[in-house]
Amino acid sequence: MSGTPPILIKQRQIDEDELRKMLIAARASGDTLNFFRHFGYQGQPHETLAFGEELLRKCKLLEPTIYETLLKGTPFYWLAHAAFQVADYERRVLYRRGRLRRYSI
Image 1: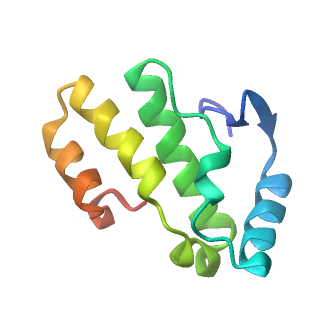
Image 2: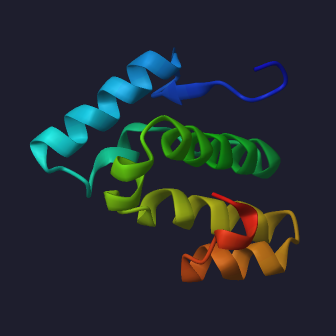
């Protein structure tokens, strides 16, 4: 996928196969609370939004059933903060409330 930001774990890029394995491992271990804490969200607000939304999109695409079980508080927190910083207040409210159906995430 050209033009999309890479998915990073603590500044280490991973591919979709590794992300899928992480999702499956999270489901197998029952650790749906901490899954998103493995990823780094800090950076420029536009980069944070692009990274976080791509991470959520890829997780949903690769393993939609597992995606639905994951607690998304960590990425939603960082995405809401980044949306506020770029003055996208509507998106900030949606992330704060966890309502992202409009954005297909």
